[in-house]
Image 1 (cartoon, protein in one colour):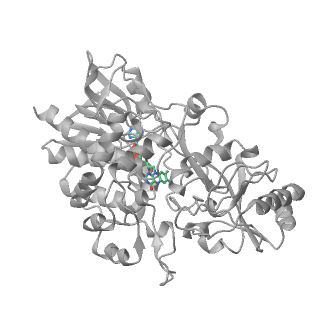
Image 2: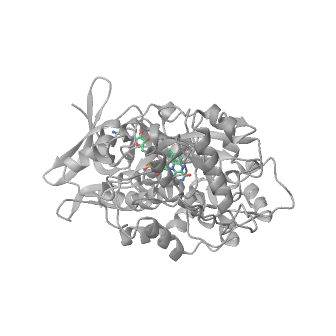
Image 3: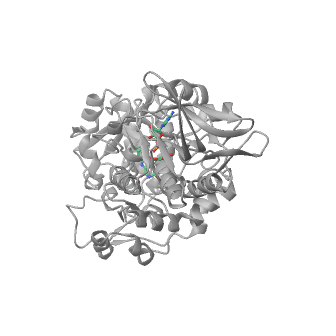
Length: 495
Ligand SMILES: Cc1cc2nc3c(=O)[nH]c(=O)nc-3n(C[C@H](O)[C@H](O)[C@H](O)COP(=O)(O)OP(=O)(O)OC[C@H]3O[C@@H](n4cnc5c(N)ncnc54)[C@H](O)[C@@H]3O)c2cc1C
Protein backbone atom coordinates (compact mmCIF):
# COMPACT_ATOMS: atom_id res chain seq x y z
CA UNK A 1 0.00 0.00 0.00
CA UNK A 2 1.18 3.53 -0.73
CA UNK A 3 2.08 5.36 2.48
CA UNK A 4 2.56 8.95 3.60
CA UNK A 5 3.49 10.54 6.91
CA UNK A 6 2.54 13.81 8.58
CA UNK A 7 2.65 15.06 12.17
CA UNK A 8 -1.11 15.64 12.30
CA UNK A 9 -3.78 14.19 10.03
CA UNK A 10 -7.13 16.00 10.08
CA UNK A 11 -10.10 14.07 8.70
CA UNK A 12 -12.69 16.34 7.02
CA UNK A 13 -12.48 19.87 5.64
CA UNK A 14 -15.33 21.74 7.28
CA UNK A 15 -15.08 24.50 9.86
CA UNK A 16 -14.00 22.18 12.69
CA UNK A 17 -11.32 20.54 10.55
CA UNK A 18 -9.80 23.69 9.11
CA UNK A 19 -9.66 25.40 12.50
CA UNK A 20 -7.91 22.25 13.77
CA UNK A 21 -5.46 22.30 10.88
CA UNK A 22 -4.63 25.99 11.38
CA UNK A 23 -4.19 25.50 15.10
CA UNK A 24 -1.92 22.47 14.62
CA UNK A 25 0.09 24.38 12.03
CA UNK A 26 0.44 27.35 14.39
CA UNK A 27 1.75 24.94 17.03
CA UNK A 28 4.50 23.83 14.64
CA UNK A 29 3.10 20.63 13.12
CA UNK A 30 3.20 19.39 9.54
CA UNK A 31 -0.46 18.96 8.80
CA UNK A 32 -2.52 17.07 6.21
CA UNK A 33 -6.25 17.61 5.68
CA UNK A 34 -8.16 14.68 4.14
CA UNK A 35 -11.49 15.50 2.53
CA UNK A 36 -13.95 13.00 1.05
CA UNK A 37 -15.49 15.56 -1.32
CA UNK A 38 -13.95 16.81 -4.53
CA UNK A 39 -12.55 20.32 -4.38
CA UNK A 40 -15.70 21.90 -5.88
CA UNK A 41 -17.82 20.45 -3.09
CA UNK A 42 -15.39 21.04 -0.24
CA UNK A 43 -16.37 22.68 3.01
CA UNK A 44 -18.93 20.25 4.45
CA UNK A 45 -22.05 21.41 6.22
CA UNK A 46 -20.09 24.46 7.32
CA UNK A 47 -20.19 25.80 3.76
CA UNK A 48 -23.97 25.35 3.63
CA UNK A 49 -24.44 27.08 6.96
CA UNK A 50 -25.82 30.49 7.75
CA UNK A 51 -22.46 31.22 9.35
CA UNK A 52 -24.06 32.24 12.67
CA UNK A 53 -21.48 31.89 15.41
CA UNK A 54 -22.92 31.92 18.93
CA UNK A 55 -20.44 33.45 21.33
CA UNK A 56 -20.67 34.89 24.83
CA UNK A 57 -20.21 38.69 24.75
CA UNK A 58 -20.93 41.88 26.64
CA UNK A 59 -23.10 43.56 24.01
CA UNK A 60 -22.42 45.71 20.92
CA UNK A 61 -19.24 47.34 22.28
CA UNK A 62 -17.65 43.97 22.91
CA UNK A 63 -18.53 42.57 19.48
CA UNK A 64 -17.25 45.67 17.68
CA UNK A 65 -13.55 44.68 17.68
CA UNK A 66 -14.43 41.36 16.04
CA UNK A 67 -16.36 42.93 13.16
CA UNK A 68 -15.11 44.18 9.82
CA UNK A 69 -15.09 47.96 9.38
CA UNK A 70 -18.10 47.75 7.07
CA UNK A 71 -20.05 45.62 9.52
CA UNK A 72 -19.41 48.07 12.36
CA UNK A 73 -21.57 50.64 10.51
CA UNK A 74 -24.63 48.53 11.35
CA UNK A 75 -24.08 49.03 15.06
CA UNK A 76 -25.80 52.42 14.67
CA UNK A 77 -29.06 50.76 13.61
CA UNK A 78 -29.00 47.40 15.27
CA UNK A 79 -29.22 46.70 18.94
CA UNK A 80 -28.83 43.52 20.95
CA UNK A 81 -28.37 42.58 24.58
CA UNK A 82 -25.18 41.25 26.12
CA UNK A 83 -24.96 37.49 26.04
CA UNK A 84 -23.21 36.46 29.25
CA UNK A 85 -21.54 33.08 29.57
CA UNK A 86 -24.04 31.98 32.23
CA UNK A 87 -26.94 32.63 29.87
CA UNK A 88 -25.25 30.73 27.03
CA UNK A 89 -24.50 27.77 29.30
CA UNK A 90 -28.02 27.92 30.74
CA UNK A 91 -29.62 27.96 27.28
CA UNK A 92 -27.69 24.93 26.04
CA UNK A 93 -28.59 23.04 29.20
CA UNK A 94 -32.24 24.18 29.27
CA UNK A 95 -32.77 23.12 25.67
CA UNK A 96 -31.00 19.82 26.39
CA UNK A 97 -33.17 19.18 29.47
CA UNK A 98 -29.98 19.41 31.54
CA UNK A 99 -28.27 16.46 29.87
CA UNK A 100 -25.29 18.08 28.11
CA UNK A 101 -21.83 17.41 29.51
CA UNK A 102 -21.34 20.43 31.75
CA UNK A 103 -17.55 20.50 31.44
CA UNK A 104 -17.63 20.37 27.63
CA UNK A 105 -20.33 23.00 27.30
CA UNK A 106 -18.56 25.27 29.76
CA UNK A 107 -15.39 25.01 27.70
CA UNK A 108 -17.40 25.78 24.54
CA UNK A 109 -18.92 28.85 26.16
CA UNK A 110 -15.80 30.09 27.96
CA UNK A 111 -13.61 29.82 24.86
CA UNK A 112 -16.22 31.09 22.39
CA UNK A 113 -15.24 34.75 22.26
CA UNK A 114 -11.50 34.19 22.18
CA UNK A 115 -11.90 31.55 19.47
CA UNK A 116 -13.82 34.05 17.33
CA UNK A 117 -11.04 36.56 17.99
CA UNK A 118 -8.40 34.01 16.93
CA UNK A 119 -10.41 33.19 13.80
CA UNK A 120 -10.58 36.91 12.98
CA UNK A 121 -6.78 36.94 13.21
CA UNK A 122 -6.69 33.98 10.81
CA UNK A 123 -8.71 36.03 8.31
CA UNK A 124 -12.36 35.21 9.08
CA UNK A 125 -14.51 38.29 8.48
CA UNK A 126 -17.27 38.67 11.08
CA UNK A 127 -20.41 40.76 10.64
CA UNK A 128 -23.79 41.18 12.34
CA UNK A 129 -26.48 38.69 11.32
CA UNK A 130 -28.62 41.50 9.88
CA UNK A 131 -29.93 39.62 6.85
CA UNK A 132 -31.52 37.03 9.09
CA UNK A 133 -34.12 39.49 10.34
CA UNK A 134 -34.41 42.14 7.64
CA UNK A 135 -33.51 42.76 4.05
CA UNK A 136 -30.41 44.99 4.35
CA UNK A 137 -31.44 46.70 1.09
CA UNK A 138 -34.81 47.63 2.55
CA UNK A 139 -34.23 49.17 5.94
CA UNK A 140 -36.73 51.45 7.67
CA UNK A 141 -34.60 54.32 9.02
CA UNK A 142 -37.01 54.91 11.94
CA UNK A 143 -36.85 51.38 13.26
CA UNK A 144 -34.23 50.12 15.68
CA UNK A 145 -33.82 46.50 14.77
CA UNK A 146 -32.96 44.00 17.44
CA UNK A 147 -30.96 40.88 16.98
CA UNK A 148 -31.15 37.94 19.38
CA UNK A 149 -28.21 38.33 21.76
CA UNK A 150 -26.80 34.86 21.11
CA UNK A 151 -27.32 34.94 17.36
CA UNK A 152 -25.99 38.41 16.67
CA UNK A 153 -22.78 37.53 14.81
CA UNK A 154 -22.05 35.55 11.68
CA UNK A 155 -19.37 35.11 9.07
CA UNK A 156 -19.51 37.55 6.16
CA UNK A 157 -21.20 35.79 3.21
CA UNK A 158 -22.38 33.17 5.68
CA UNK A 159 -21.04 29.61 5.39
CA UNK A 160 -19.60 30.20 1.93
CA UNK A 161 -17.63 33.19 3.18
CA UNK A 162 -16.55 31.37 6.32
CA UNK A 163 -15.12 28.49 4.33
CA UNK A 164 -13.54 30.77 1.72
CA UNK A 165 -11.76 32.62 4.52
CA UNK A 166 -10.65 29.42 6.25
CA UNK A 167 -9.44 27.76 3.03
CA UNK A 168 -7.55 30.96 2.18
CA UNK A 169 -5.85 30.80 5.57
CA UNK A 170 -5.02 27.11 5.06
CA UNK A 171 -3.53 27.89 1.66
CA UNK A 172 -1.51 30.81 3.06
CA UNK A 173 -0.16 28.48 5.73
CA UNK A 174 0.88 25.95 3.07
CA UNK A 175 -1.13 23.14 4.66
CA UNK A 176 -1.68 20.14 2.34
CA UNK A 177 -5.30 19.27 1.51
CA UNK A 178 -6.16 16.04 -0.35
CA UNK A 179 -9.60 16.07 -1.95
CA UNK A 180 -11.52 13.00 -3.14
CA UNK A 181 -9.87 11.25 -0.21
CA UNK A 182 -12.41 9.54 2.02
CA UNK A 183 -10.97 7.95 5.12
CA UNK A 184 -12.35 4.49 5.62
CA UNK A 185 -10.13 2.95 8.30
CA UNK A 186 -8.27 3.99 11.41
CA UNK A 187 -4.85 2.40 11.82
CA UNK A 188 -4.10 1.08 15.29
CA UNK A 189 -0.92 -0.07 16.94
CA UNK A 190 -2.15 -1.80 20.06
CA UNK A 191 -4.49 0.72 21.61
CA UNK A 192 -2.87 3.76 19.95
CA UNK A 193 -4.22 5.29 16.77
CA UNK A 194 -1.28 5.84 14.46
CA UNK A 195 -2.95 6.92 11.23
CA UNK A 196 -5.76 6.40 8.75
CA UNK A 197 -6.38 4.63 5.47
CA UNK A 198 -7.70 6.70 2.59
CA UNK A 199 -9.74 4.99 -0.13
CA UNK A 200 -9.10 6.61 -3.48
CA UNK A 201 -10.85 5.62 -6.72
CA UNK A 202 -8.60 2.63 -7.34
CA UNK A 203 -6.26 2.20 -4.38
CA UNK A 204 -5.66 2.77 -0.70
CA UNK A 205 -3.13 5.05 0.95
CA UNK A 206 -2.06 4.71 4.55
CA UNK A 207 -1.24 8.03 6.17
CA UNK A 208 0.43 8.06 9.55
CA UNK A 209 0.23 10.83 12.12
CA UNK A 210 -1.71 11.96 15.16
CA UNK A 211 -5.33 11.84 14.02
CA UNK A 212 -8.05 14.43 14.54
CA UNK A 213 -11.52 13.35 13.41
CA UNK A 214 -13.69 16.21 12.13
CA UNK A 215 -15.71 14.38 9.49
CA UNK A 216 -19.22 15.38 10.57
CA UNK A 217 -22.19 13.30 11.69
CA UNK A 218 -24.35 10.72 9.88
CA UNK A 219 -27.17 13.00 8.73
CA UNK A 220 -26.63 12.24 5.02
CA UNK A 221 -26.84 8.47 5.53
CA UNK A 222 -30.45 7.20 5.32
CA UNK A 223 -29.56 3.77 6.67
CA UNK A 224 -27.96 5.22 9.80
CA UNK A 225 -30.77 7.77 10.19
CA UNK A 226 -33.31 4.97 10.20
CA UNK A 227 -31.17 2.90 12.56
CA UNK A 228 -30.53 5.60 15.13
CA UNK A 229 -33.23 8.28 14.71
CA UNK A 230 -36.10 5.92 13.92
CA UNK A 231 -38.71 5.18 11.27
CA UNK A 232 -39.43 7.98 8.84
CA UNK A 233 -36.07 9.70 9.31
CA UNK A 234 -34.65 7.77 6.35
CA UNK A 235 -37.00 9.81 4.14
CA UNK A 236 -36.28 13.36 5.33
CA UNK A 237 -34.47 15.92 3.22
CA UNK A 238 -30.86 16.72 4.03
CA UNK A 239 -30.11 20.43 4.34
CA UNK A 240 -26.38 20.17 3.88
CA UNK A 241 -23.49 18.09 2.59
CA UNK A 242 -24.06 14.69 0.97
CA UNK A 243 -20.67 13.52 2.27
CA UNK A 244 -21.49 13.30 5.97
CA UNK A 245 -22.22 9.56 5.88
CA UNK A 246 -21.02 8.68 9.36
CA UNK A 247 -18.26 6.40 8.04
CA UNK A 248 -15.52 7.83 10.21
CA UNK A 249 -17.80 7.98 13.23
CA UNK A 250 -18.61 4.27 12.81
CA UNK A 251 -14.94 3.40 12.41
CA UNK A 252 -14.08 5.31 15.58
CA UNK A 253 -16.71 3.33 17.50
CA UNK A 254 -15.37 0.08 16.06
CA UNK A 255 -11.89 1.09 17.21
CA UNK A 256 -13.17 1.42 20.76
CA UNK A 257 -14.41 5.03 21.05
CA UNK A 258 -17.28 5.60 23.44
CA UNK A 259 -20.62 6.60 21.93
CA UNK A 260 -21.90 9.74 23.65
CA UNK A 261 -24.87 12.05 23.53
CA UNK A 262 -28.30 11.89 21.99
CA UNK A 263 -27.97 9.20 19.33
CA UNK A 264 -31.70 9.23 18.72
CA UNK A 265 -31.78 13.01 18.29
CA UNK A 266 -30.84 15.52 15.66
CA UNK A 267 -31.11 19.12 14.58
CA UNK A 268 -33.92 19.38 12.04
CA UNK A 269 -35.72 22.52 10.96
CA UNK A 270 -38.48 23.80 8.65
CA UNK A 271 -37.40 23.55 5.04
CA UNK A 272 -39.17 24.49 1.84
CA UNK A 273 -41.18 21.43 0.78
CA UNK A 274 -39.72 21.72 -2.72
CA UNK A 275 -36.10 21.79 -1.52
CA UNK A 276 -33.79 19.22 -3.13
CA UNK A 277 -33.29 15.89 -1.37
CA UNK A 278 -29.78 16.91 -0.29
CA UNK A 279 -28.21 20.34 0.01
CA UNK A 280 -27.48 22.25 -3.18
CA UNK A 281 -24.43 24.53 -3.03
CA UNK A 282 -26.16 27.05 -5.31
CA UNK A 283 -28.86 27.48 -2.67
CA UNK A 284 -26.93 26.67 0.54
CA UNK A 285 -29.12 27.86 3.44
CA UNK A 286 -31.72 29.74 1.41
CA UNK A 287 -34.44 27.05 1.52
CA UNK A 288 -34.83 27.38 5.31
CA UNK A 289 -38.20 28.78 6.44
CA UNK A 290 -37.78 30.39 9.85
CA UNK A 291 -40.37 33.17 9.96
CA UNK A 292 -43.01 30.83 11.41
CA UNK A 293 -43.22 32.68 14.77
CA UNK A 294 -45.24 35.29 12.82
CA UNK A 295 -47.39 32.62 11.11
CA UNK A 296 -49.85 29.92 11.96
CA UNK A 297 -48.35 26.52 11.25
CA UNK A 298 -50.95 23.91 10.32
CA UNK A 299 -50.77 20.35 9.04
CA UNK A 300 -52.64 18.83 6.13
CA UNK A 301 -55.66 18.27 8.41
CA UNK A 302 -55.80 22.05 8.90
CA UNK A 303 -54.72 21.73 12.55
CA UNK A 304 -52.04 23.55 14.52
CA UNK A 305 -49.55 21.27 16.27
CA UNK A 306 -46.88 23.46 17.95
CA UNK A 307 -46.53 26.76 19.80
CA UNK A 308 -45.07 28.84 16.95
CA UNK A 309 -44.09 31.63 19.37
CA UNK A 310 -42.71 29.56 22.22
CA UNK A 311 -39.41 31.44 22.22
CA UNK A 312 -37.10 33.38 19.91
CA UNK A 313 -36.69 31.45 16.71
CA UNK A 314 -33.04 30.46 17.29
CA UNK A 315 -34.17 28.54 20.36
CA UNK A 316 -37.03 26.64 18.69
CA UNK A 317 -36.20 26.07 15.01
CA UNK A 318 -33.89 23.09 15.61
CA UNK A 319 -36.71 21.01 17.10
CA UNK A 320 -39.47 22.27 14.82
CA UNK A 321 -38.35 20.08 11.91
CA UNK A 322 -39.02 16.96 13.99
CA UNK A 323 -42.51 18.22 14.84
CA UNK A 324 -43.22 18.72 11.13
CA UNK A 325 -41.86 15.27 10.33
CA UNK A 326 -44.45 13.76 12.66
CA UNK A 327 -47.32 15.29 10.64
CA UNK A 328 -48.99 13.40 7.77
CA UNK A 329 -46.61 13.19 4.80
CA UNK A 330 -44.10 15.24 6.84
CA UNK A 331 -45.64 18.42 5.43
CA UNK A 332 -46.95 21.60 7.05
CA UNK A 333 -48.13 25.02 5.95
CA UNK A 334 -46.96 28.40 7.24
CA UNK A 335 -49.84 30.83 6.85
CA UNK A 336 -49.18 34.57 6.98
CA UNK A 337 -51.56 37.48 6.45
CA UNK A 338 -50.84 41.00 5.27
CA UNK A 339 -50.00 42.22 8.78
CA UNK A 340 -46.88 40.04 8.95
CA UNK A 341 -45.90 39.31 5.38
CA UNK A 342 -43.29 42.11 5.38
CA UNK A 343 -41.49 40.31 8.20
CA UNK A 344 -40.50 37.26 6.17
CA UNK A 345 -36.78 36.61 6.01
CA UNK A 346 -35.34 37.61 2.62
CA UNK A 347 -34.61 33.95 1.80
CA UNK A 348 -38.35 33.24 1.41
CA UNK A 349 -37.76 34.64 -2.08
CA UNK A 350 -36.53 31.19 -3.11
CA UNK A 351 -39.99 29.72 -2.40
CA UNK A 352 -43.23 29.74 -4.35
CA UNK A 353 -46.04 31.00 -2.11
CA UNK A 354 -49.68 29.99 -2.46
CA UNK A 355 -51.93 33.04 -2.12
CA UNK A 356 -55.70 33.44 -1.74
CA UNK A 357 -58.22 36.05 -0.68
CA UNK A 358 -60.05 33.77 1.72
CA UNK A 359 -59.14 30.87 3.96
CA UNK A 360 -61.55 28.63 2.07
CA UNK A 361 -59.86 29.43 -1.22
CA UNK A 362 -56.44 28.94 0.37
CA UNK A 363 -57.48 25.55 1.74
CA UNK A 364 -58.71 24.49 -1.67
CA UNK A 365 -55.41 25.45 -3.29
CA UNK A 366 -53.49 23.61 -0.57
CA UNK A 367 -55.80 20.61 -0.83
CA UNK A 368 -56.55 20.62 2.88
CA UNK A 369 -60.04 20.57 4.48
CA UNK A 370 -61.49 24.10 4.29
CA UNK A 371 -63.83 23.67 7.26
CA UNK A 372 -61.03 22.48 9.49
CA UNK A 373 -58.68 25.30 8.49
CA UNK A 374 -61.37 27.95 8.94
CA UNK A 375 -62.30 26.56 12.35
CA UNK A 376 -58.65 26.44 13.44
CA UNK A 377 -58.07 30.05 12.44
CA UNK A 378 -61.40 31.27 13.88
CA UNK A 379 -60.72 29.59 17.24
CA UNK A 380 -57.20 30.92 17.24
CA UNK A 381 -58.28 34.47 16.37
CA UNK A 382 -60.96 34.42 19.07
CA UNK A 383 -58.31 33.53 21.65
CA UNK A 384 -55.92 36.37 20.78
CA UNK A 385 -55.62 39.19 23.28
CA UNK A 386 -54.97 42.93 23.05
CA UNK A 387 -51.41 44.19 23.31
CA UNK A 388 -48.53 45.56 21.29
CA UNK A 389 -47.10 43.24 18.63
CA UNK A 390 -43.29 43.59 18.73
CA UNK A 391 -41.64 41.46 16.06
CA UNK A 392 -38.05 41.77 17.23
CA UNK A 393 -38.46 40.78 20.87
CA UNK A 394 -40.61 38.31 22.75
CA UNK A 395 -43.73 40.43 23.13
CA UNK A 396 -45.80 38.18 25.38
CA UNK A 397 -48.74 38.55 23.02
CA UNK A 398 -50.28 35.19 23.81
CA UNK A 399 -53.24 33.13 22.67
CA UNK A 400 -54.61 30.06 24.42
CA UNK A 401 -57.17 28.62 22.02
CA UNK A 402 -59.14 25.65 23.34
CA UNK A 403 -58.08 22.36 21.77
CA UNK A 404 -54.97 23.86 20.15
CA UNK A 405 -51.42 24.51 21.34
CA UNK A 406 -50.92 27.93 22.88
CA UNK A 407 -49.03 30.59 20.97
CA UNK A 408 -46.86 32.30 23.59
CA UNK A 409 -45.64 35.33 21.63
CA UNK A 410 -46.54 37.22 18.46
CA UNK A 411 -50.15 35.92 18.57
CA UNK A 412 -52.19 38.27 16.41
CA UNK A 413 -55.43 37.40 14.61
CA UNK A 414 -54.81 36.00 11.14
CA UNK A 415 -57.52 38.00 9.42
CA UNK A 416 -56.07 40.30 6.78
CA UNK A 417 -56.13 38.76 3.30
CA UNK A 418 -54.65 37.97 0.92
CA UNK A 419 -53.31 35.04 2.92
CA UNK A 420 -49.88 33.82 1.89
CA UNK A 421 -48.76 30.26 2.54
CA UNK A 422 -45.42 28.47 2.27
CA UNK A 423 -45.35 24.64 2.25
CA UNK A 424 -42.62 23.23 4.46
CA UNK A 425 -41.16 19.87 5.37
CA UNK A 426 -38.51 18.56 7.76
CA UNK A 427 -34.88 19.14 6.81
CA UNK A 428 -32.21 17.38 8.85
CA UNK A 429 -29.21 19.54 9.67
CA UNK A 430 -26.92 17.39 11.77
CA UNK A 431 -27.00 14.51 14.24
CA UNK A 432 -26.40 14.89 17.98
CA UNK A 433 -24.82 11.51 18.75
CA UNK A 434 -21.04 11.19 18.46
CA UNK A 435 -17.88 10.03 20.16
CA UNK A 436 -17.10 11.01 23.71
CA UNK A 437 -14.33 13.59 24.03
CA UNK A 438 -12.84 15.30 27.05
CA UNK A 439 -12.04 18.97 27.57
CA UNK A 440 -8.78 18.44 25.72
CA UNK A 441 -10.66 17.05 22.66
CA UNK A 442 -9.16 13.59 23.29
CA UNK A 443 -11.42 10.73 22.22
CA UNK A 444 -12.46 8.64 25.20
CA UNK A 445 -12.79 4.86 24.93
CA UNK A 446 -15.60 2.66 26.19
CA UNK A 447 -13.86 2.23 29.54
CA UNK A 448 -13.43 5.96 30.06
CA UNK A 449 -9.74 6.27 29.11
CA UNK A 450 -8.35 8.64 26.43
CA UNK A 451 -7.44 6.80 23.20
CA UNK A 452 -3.79 7.61 22.50
CA UNK A 453 -3.28 9.45 19.22
CA UNK A 454 -6.97 10.24 18.59
CA UNK A 455 -8.81 13.56 18.92
CA UNK A 456 -12.21 14.70 17.66
CA UNK A 457 -14.23 17.85 17.16
CA UNK A 458 -17.33 19.20 15.42
CA UNK A 459 -20.49 17.26 14.67
CA UNK A 460 -18.63 14.00 15.17
CA UNK A 461 -18.30 14.65 18.93
CA UNK A 462 -21.30 13.90 21.13
CA UNK A 463 -22.66 14.96 24.53
CA UNK A 464 -23.21 18.62 23.63
CA UNK A 465 -26.80 18.82 22.38
CA UNK A 466 -29.91 16.85 23.32
CA UNK A 467 -33.47 17.35 22.03
CA UNK A 468 -32.91 20.93 20.89
CA UNK A 469 -30.13 23.42 20.26
CA UNK A 470 -29.44 27.16 20.40
CA UNK A 471 -28.72 28.30 16.83
CA UNK A 472 -25.09 29.11 16.07
CA UNK A 473 -23.51 26.84 18.66
CA UNK A 474 -22.60 24.10 16.15
CA UNK A 475 -19.96 26.11 14.33
CA UNK A 476 -18.65 27.49 17.61
CA UNK A 477 -18.40 24.00 19.12
CA UNK A 478 -16.35 22.77 16.15
CA UNK A 479 -14.05 25.77 16.25
CA UNK A 480 -13.47 25.83 20.00
CA UNK A 481 -12.60 22.14 20.16
CA UNK A 482 -10.82 22.27 16.82
CA UNK A 483 -8.46 24.85 18.19
CA UNK A 484 -7.86 22.73 21.28
CA UNK A 485 -7.48 19.51 19.26
CA UNK A 486 -5.06 21.05 16.77
CA UNK A 487 -2.76 22.32 19.46
CA UNK A 488 -2.90 19.10 21.50
CA UNK A 489 -2.32 16.88 18.46
CA UNK A 490 0.63 19.03 17.37
CA UNK A 491 2.16 18.86 20.83
CA UNK A 492 1.77 15.08 20.91
CA UNK A 493 3.28 14.71 17.44
CA UNK A 494 6.21 17.04 17.92
CA UNK A 495 6.92 16.06 21.50
C1 LIG B 1 -28.20 24.61 5.85
C2 LIG B 1 -27.43 24.64 7.14
C3 LIG B 1 -27.34 25.82 7.87
C4 LIG B 1 -26.64 25.86 9.07
N1 LIG B 1 -26.46 27.05 9.71
C5 LIG B 1 -25.69 27.11 10.81
C6 LIG B 1 -25.36 28.35 11.43
O1 LIG B 1 -25.71 29.43 10.95
N2 LIG B 1 -24.59 28.31 12.56
C7 LIG B 1 -24.13 27.13 13.12
O2 LIG B 1 -23.46 27.16 14.14
N3 LIG B 1 -24.39 25.96 12.51
C8 LIG B 1 -25.13 25.93 11.39
N4 LIG B 1 -25.35 24.73 10.78
C9 LIG B 1 -24.75 23.53 11.38
C10 LIG B 1 -23.27 23.56 11.06
O3 LIG B 1 -23.11 23.69 9.67
C11 LIG B 1 -22.57 22.34 11.57
O4 LIG B 1 -22.78 22.16 12.94
C12 LIG B 1 -21.07 22.51 11.34
O5 LIG B 1 -20.82 22.99 10.07
C13 LIG B 1 -20.38 21.22 11.52
O6 LIG B 1 -19.03 21.43 11.22
P1 LIG B 1 -18.06 20.20 11.06
O7 LIG B 1 -16.78 20.79 10.64
O8 LIG B 1 -18.15 19.33 12.24
O9 LIG B 1 -18.73 19.36 9.87
P2 LIG B 1 -18.76 19.67 8.32
O10 LIG B 1 -18.65 21.11 8.04
O11 LIG B 1 -19.94 18.97 7.77
O12 LIG B 1 -17.44 19.00 7.79
C14 LIG B 1 -17.29 17.60 7.77
C15 LIG B 1 -16.40 17.26 6.60
O13 LIG B 1 -16.00 15.92 6.67
C16 LIG B 1 -15.99 15.40 5.36
N5 LIG B 1 -16.07 13.94 5.45
C17 LIG B 1 -17.13 13.17 5.74
N6 LIG B 1 -16.79 11.87 5.73
C18 LIG B 1 -15.48 11.82 5.44
C19 LIG B 1 -14.54 10.76 5.28
N7 LIG B 1 -14.90 9.48 5.39
N8 LIG B 1 -13.26 11.08 4.99
C20 LIG B 1 -12.87 12.38 4.83
N9 LIG B 1 -13.73 13.41 4.95
C21 LIG B 1 -15.01 13.14 5.26
C22 LIG B 1 -17.17 16.03 4.70
O14 LIG B 1 -17.07 16.00 3.30
C23 LIG B 1 -17.09 17.45 5.26
O15 LIG B 1 -16.31 18.29 4.46
C24 LIG B 1 -26.04 24.68 9.56
C25 LIG B 1 -26.09 23.50 8.81
C26 LIG B 1 -26.77 23.48 7.61
C27 LIG B 1 -26.79 22.22 6.82
